[in-house]
Image 1 (cartoon, rainbow over the protein chains, first blue to last red):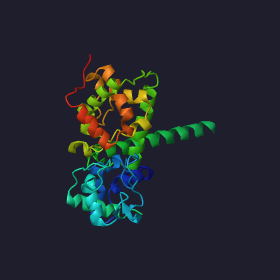
Image 2 (image 1 turned 90 degrees about the vertical axis):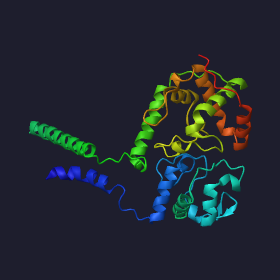
Image 3 (image 1 turned 30 degrees about the vertical axis):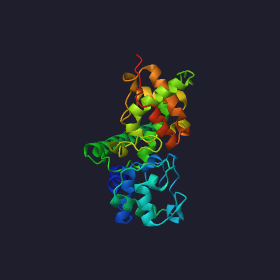
Image 4 (image 1 turned 180 degrees about the horizontal axis):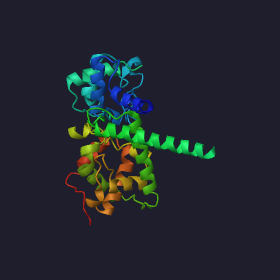
Length: 116
Length: 182
């Protein structure tokens, strides 16, 4: 049946979209939360589609960075604090508070810290 | 012999087209395509839409001649229009968009970087005509032509505006309206 050879690949792609993600659950939720809070409006983030703007620093290799925003040690707690209230840490920062919950910020940190 | 080749090629093309049409119909009518805003576009679909948008705007704006706008008063009026109509979805330096706009697909996104991406006439075209299925409305039905150019003039000055400078400017704009000078 030659038809199946033609329908097969696109159908398979459709079926596979969204499945077979090797990321841990927290990081998966974090990637979705990054998208849902518009982080890709300013940052290029690997794995977040549509992040081709460069207003803020690109976040590729974030897991290897020693500092957050050039001033805080890159620990999960500091990252969560920065994501939730950047201007409380750096009044000059152009990054606004985006109403990110503690749980979402923690998931975002789980995703960002895996970027190498 | 030659006729057989032509016939075979034609039949193969027709069969391929038919199978492709059936496959497309299956995906569409079967509800296979995920339209939820809680999932992101696939990179391929996003790239296709983005490229289409860029070239469409470029072509349609090609014949527009941008007027020279540098009067401070015009830019200030543009800033008032920006505050009244743009900040809700696009935010401002140091200011987040409204909650509903943050998760829009596609994201409206900040305007601080658009001046580097688009020419003046293209920014005007986008503001005037909007972009279908992105949430960007056609402002020509809401703003006068002079106000459209004023907004564009302000948006082109956005990259130089720090969060503190925007806070100061917003305070100075208090009470000032985005005039509809029609």
